[in-house]
Length: 231
Image 1: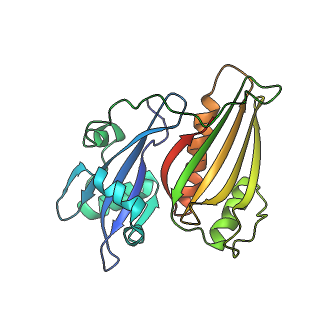
Image 2: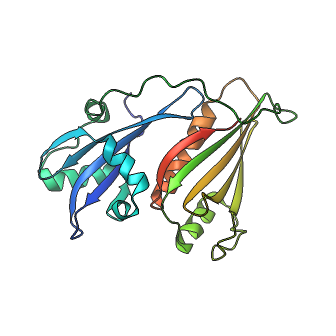
């Protein structure tokens, strides 16, 4: 659709000497409730000069801290500028890039929920998501997130025992949203625990919020791993 915002996540890949050598374009496949159903990606390396399926690289990126040090998240405009510098051509549009992603994973089974105590009083439905990220947040990153979300940093980042660093709330046309920024997996990762109290019959605001929160974390150098729904 003309005028639609970029849907793919872009990353610059650097070689061992710190020079840009390629691009990675990723897309999370979402279930109807906006939880993750899979991750597909394509990569371009200057030495090869072509786009190719890159799911193995995307998986390594989540597990290999050394590889993450050679990758920087960027927006589409920055990716297009770098691509033009490296090969003198325009970055393909997102539909064209998707053609190199390969077949999406098979339809996942119906998700298992950890529990459902019913919606919060006054709402039609309550959902709880966790967006999981790989990477590290510096004190400056935490300050930037606090300012962007009007979220006081209430936990001590220097204390490894601190789990929740801050919480934020939003209201959107009667729907209520809250998210907690926390350390997870014994400090090996970060997560946003997002509670969505929905009033009306539509849930588009959930997708918009989860996408926006993911984008904000990527701007601080974090790599999204998955979006799980617990309720």
